[in-house]
Length: 616
Ligand code: F6R
Image (cartoon, rainbow, N blue to C red):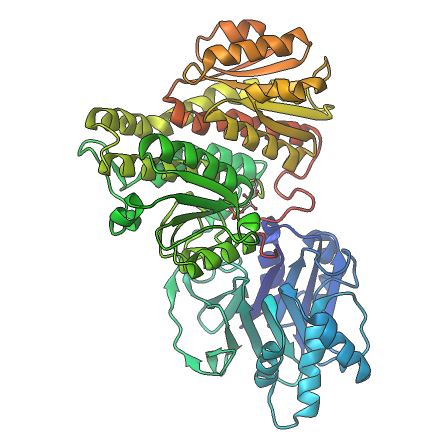
């Protein structure tokens, strides 16, 4: 969602801020803006559209300042427009703000400020906050700018990450966070602020991640002064050494981040397994689980909470844990779970899955589960993300930064972690024999190679198949068992980036409704590996053929039965049914990708979507 970049130092603030905003484009946005300190004035440029549209109207600001901040906005209050874009400036023209998140009580404050004579030029909650800061300074002559920001934040509720500048306090940036992430990069005589470390990773490897409810006043003169927003208590910052490299966040010769990330999967899955799966010793080592193994094993039930693609990973996690550990599992959308008073006790385990580690609904669901006494285990990709910090224990997926909005490598790494957890629990509680455990971990270990093979052998075929479906209006995705959630995920990928309507179904459910949709214009992707209800799938394929549906079949190498009926065939290597979604997902990701590219869609930043969904 929205992105923030701020800078104070010796470099050209315009270049730092604009390049930083480019790095945050992946988060999803619809307008962009920048404000630079110009002596005792602000220079502001903002526009609906992309960062390049902002550059087109703001080149006159190059080389003009060493202090500034910028923003990419994902509309919440008010349509995407020049007026609603950030930064917003207070009525007296002295205070500028950029803001991620939502101020829930903005309406009441706006009414109060309007009565005091304030005028609003946008529909945003952000403009209310900046004027509240001005108002508090107007009525309290003895408070300084950071104090006014703190007072204002104590008046609002909601979620935010903000950066604020004041003309009378040159060189000073005040930042704060509650619910939206904010990192401060510590350079040599320069400071950076950003929604994540990617805008400043080329300049410094040292960063402070602002904690929930904290604010910081940053200046070259006084450094970084962190306080608790509520009571102004000084906080000693914990400086982190960034492991992120520039290479990881660049396209590396690929046309899109999504394609790069699809092709990174042999490595990302390998990285997920590294140090955890020791095949020769016959053990799975997971620090996050080891200390809590008994608690996990004694759970009366495990509830998996997540959203979107991570929820699909959760569904496959349910199959894995129930099959191998024989512990009952429920999978819930975090957004539903949190609002429906679920039965959760201190005997329960909740597994929260989130690539970004910032999803607002998943965060709120975790808090609720913890209040009910559950032990919450997190599976996150982003190290030090909010979710990884609030959970009781957890495992990182170690897939590396995922920049494409459509999740690919993070998904297969989530499945890999869930496989490790299920097999570890199953072995520990005796449901898995040693022999079966060894067979499965050997297969798990072979997955990076198989994923590499499937990328090599299917990329050109899928690219070619995609050409035939540029004009499709609808798609059905079918699978059974472990591959039913894989079908859901395949459909989600297609709709997200190509804007073609797509539905995933368990193949057997087809005859209970969706079969009515099938005619010669309906493409149907069917996942039909040898293991896992193959005979039943063969019947489903025949039913589709009889109605002239266009079948794209994902089958194991050497398959003849389904392949002879299908219109298009994609072969992938055999593996145990439980791991087949990991392999089958690769051609499904490629299919969505190529169809979207042929349709001219913006693959990495699909319309209306955001990488981390920090609003509810
Ligand atoms: C789809 C996608 C989204 C996310 C969802 C949850 O490609 O990326 O559906 O999976 O917004 O996000 P995380 O996993 O960050 O909690």
